Image (cartoon, rainbow, N blue to C red; front, side, top):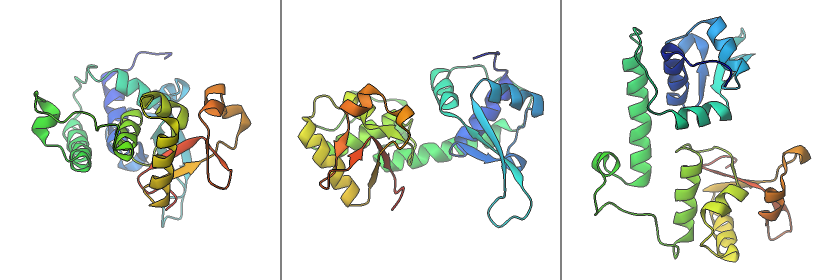
Length: 217
């Protein structure tokens, strides 16, 4: 981080998060302005790209959260959002819609999420490895579907599951279309832990990352 995030900039970041990570600038409120967006981009929190929207003719500016932006928000959930902007209600509405989707996917009630008690469901037992994969995936992706998760990180989260069992669960999820497994094509991205965590398909192909939620299906 190279500059302090102001409340209006933070609300802007949450608006992007509420949209699933990115949106067309013309649809985003609040917009903190070009100078603020440039500072956020220089800090590695967002990316700005001019491109044609679906069905559009002229190029428009698309703004999205970078991985560092997601990480920063996750580490500052209690940051000050006190601003005069009236866009906060719309951002809250979008965030609550995302929360509803997450609760429905996890089969949780709002009470389970907001006030978990002793009876709240714990993590799935390791005798259900596919459920464990799903739970760990969404924990690593901050609840997002179709987000890239490294198998190295997933294996670290699920260290209690024997590797052959975990590999079988991942391959089963891929076969059913619930998951997509990919290799890292850029050698510069492949770390030592990625090589250690590599999954080999029945045909011998290497896989380093996983997406859940229908990517590539």
